[in-house]
Length: 293
Picture 1 (cartoon, rainbow, N blue to C red):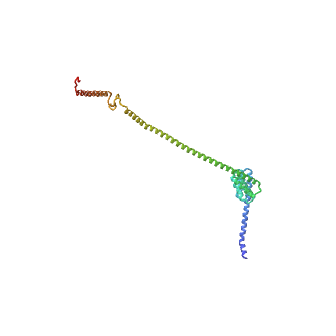
Picture 2: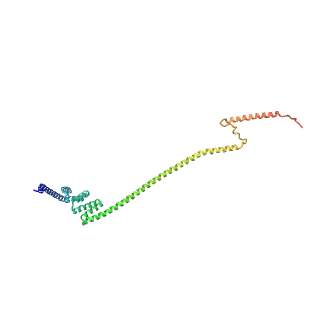
Picture 3: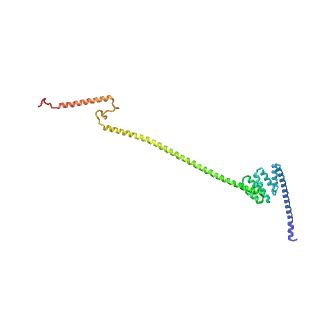
């Protein structure tokens, strides 16, 4: 036996075993797919009977049985969509689209993903989902209509967002202007208050100055008046009727009676002096003859 024969004899059992193993795996996969489809059928039936809980359970078991059963996640997604559970629905539609290699199935998955985006008002994502659906089936008029509707809704949404942004900017500008006006008013009030305080302070200082001037000028006027009065008295001659004020005793030192007594004594003394003078004049004069022709 040659070398090639030995090699064939050595590896032949392994090749047979590998083929048998592959065959067993294929059979097991086919069996799992069949069980998954049966569960899907049961779930579809339960869903038509409005038994959502049982249908959901069977759909989940069908999905876990076989990855090749694209109908199970797709139908479960539709069940969620009809119950307005859009988050779960989108996840199942996406799962169906990723598992499927057939364009018709991908088209349906992306179409329904676009419908979920329309429900949640995510119009930009809806446009992209419908475009993906049309790439897998360009002839579907329903998808084309949904795409046009999504574009229109997206434009309205963008216009509304722009209007809202403009309004927000306008409101912000008005608010800024209002704040500036309030700050300006506050500054003006502060300046007016300072001005009023300054004017009140000036008025107060002026009043105090006027009072001070009056207090200072009054003595000067009195002094000036006293000076003029004194000057007039100095210029006015003493006519002899008025006693010499400098020689008179001060009223606060002598009483009236004492003053009269003093004056009388002074007059008597003056009379005595005058008599002595007269006597001296008579004694020293020469006697003439009574007739001296």
